[in-house]
Image: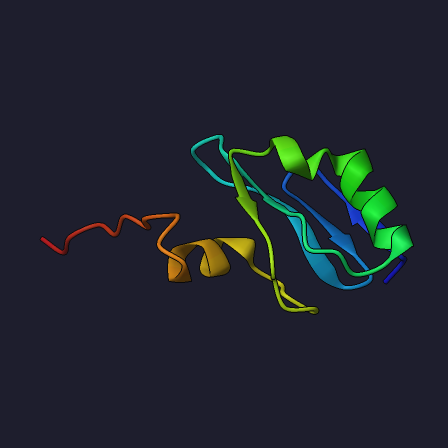
Length: 82
């Protein structure tokens, strides 16, 4: 994996997710300080202006929505079985 990988759906810096787009159009940004280079990647992805902003995200995190849900910042709606 390169140092910075970015698509419309997500962005990673050194294997840690720094931005994630949700299906409802909201975005989650990771502002945790890891390194000078990751800070440059975070600035490029404009993570401070995401709909939900997270700090203290563990290094290597692959799913920001799980962290947001765990911190009760995001409610995941599940379909009820018929």
